Every structure is written in C-alpha cells, then in structure tokens.
Amino acid sequence: MSYTDGSQNDCFNYRNETLLAVLSFLGMRAIAWTFVATAPKRLDSKKPSAVQLCFAGRYHEWNWCSGLHVPAEWRPTNSRTTFVLATLASQVLHTVIFDSLHFHLQSLSPNTFGSPAGGTIFPVNGVPNLRSTYITLLSGMVLYSAIQSAHDACAVFCILFFQQDPTQWPPLFDHPWRSTSLNRFWAKGWHQIFRHEFISLGGRPLYALGFGRTDAVLGVFTVSSILHLLSHWGLRRSSEWSTIGGYFIIQGVGVVLEGIWKKITGRRVGGVLGWIWTVAWVVGWGNIMMDAWARAGLMGSVFFPNGMRPVDVMKKLL
Image (cartoon, rainbow, N blue to C red; front, side, top):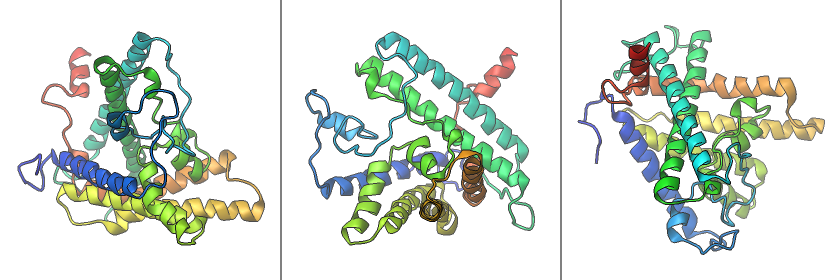
C-alpha cells in the first residue's frame, strides 16, 4: 500500500512515512496490551468504552496513566462552544506558524534539501555548524506546530461530531521550550502519545528482568528509536539507524547523565544552565536526525493543495 506514485522524489512520501508510523505504533500497542499486567479501567464513573480505549492517546482517563503528566488546561472546559472556538483559533495559528516556517526552510535551499529530491543541511565537510543548527531548531518548531495543529483539529472534530467532552482533550504539549532538563522535556514538555507503549515494551521488561533505572530509561528510548526508524522507511530511502535511531538513544543517554549528576551533587538539573544544557543536547544532536530527514526529501514535502497553502493565501491578502 502506498500513497504515492512510487517515485523516490515524490513530494507526498511523507504520507507513507505517516502510514508506517501509525502501523508501527499500532503493532507496539497490540503487544503492550497483550502483556499488560492490569485490565483497563476508567478513573471516573462513566461506562467503559472499547472505542474510547482504542483511540486513547495518553490513557489519561484510564488506570494505565500512572505517572503521566497532563498539562494544565488553558481553555474553559465548562463551555463546549468557547472551548471549540479557542481550540480552533489555536489550530489556525499553529497551521500558519507551521507553514510559514516550512516555507522559510524550503527557501533556504530550494534545489537541495528544500526539494523532494533532498539534500544535506551540512556544509561540504559534513560537520554541523550554526546554519545547520538554525535549520534544525526551525525544523523542530515546524514539527511541534504540525503536531499541535493536527491535535487541535482532531479535538474540534471529535467534540463537534462525536459529542466528546472538552475534558477529554487536555493540552498535548507543556511548553517544551521552557524545559530546564532533558527529563522535564521528554517526560512533560513534549507530547506523551507514545509514552505507555514505550514504557511497556522498553522499560518494564528490563525492570522485570532485574535491570535498573538506567537500563530501563535506555530501553524506553530504544523503542522510540525503533518506531521513528520504521517510519523513516516510508520515505523510500535507506535505513538510518545511526542517525534517526541514534538520536533518540542519545537522548536517553542524556537523561541518564542527569540522573548521575543528581546522585553526585544531590541536585536536579535546572535553572538557566539546565535550560542551556537541554537546548544544546536536544537541538545539537538533532542536527544528525534533521539531516537524515532533509536528505530523504522530507523538507520538500507538499502539505496543502495548490493555491491553498497558508503562505500563498496570506501573500494574496497582503
């Protein structure tokens, strides 16, 4: 099954990447559910729904959400109309941010990494520099805005057409740019959609085998690397274990280093220096992953029909 015409330089290859990501995640979810220790149970008095469980992203209404961080709600949940309008405004805003930054990235090199053919973001010597780091930072913002926009759209759709309650759609992110540690960034700031599956397949089995927290943390990030590596194959390029997979494993190493720091000093990583450390580790190592995506042509993708791209619409209006 493919959503493109089979060309390696197809600007719609991201659809295949998304398809592989979804299928890989569903496979991981099936395995996690098979070996789960406790049966699913709602935390409130509402009647359990198999459909709701299947489509639950973070299980925040179920007993499987132990340890899950749910960001504070900024929208009024007592009014369905107001909640939908606020979410719709967020969706429009993040769509504009996503496309504006994406357009800017493509304009930096329209014939190489800004095209479906792809190209490296590194200079000739292949070493990351300020330009590649700038591209990596903006790419992360593009990714954040795209995920947030999609989440907002799903929330509006489900509340309007399936009459879901606004409380079923808490914020997805918790200001990741404010994170002063890697632990805070990955456990609270970034989205937790895959959290249960990553822990079930990478963390708990190692604990059960007698391994400690360090191995469990690395196990969780290894499962994350596998998911992202499998989805990357959808771009019809060679596997990128050392880059795509390596990025998420090295993030786990960073979290482990923070644990070692706490043991030695008795203090958690935090403050201004913690923020600098977090940005440097997430964005710095992000160079290798973004370069892999750029070489695969992901930055040259087309996400909107001709004439419907927000940047083009704004140009006409202005």
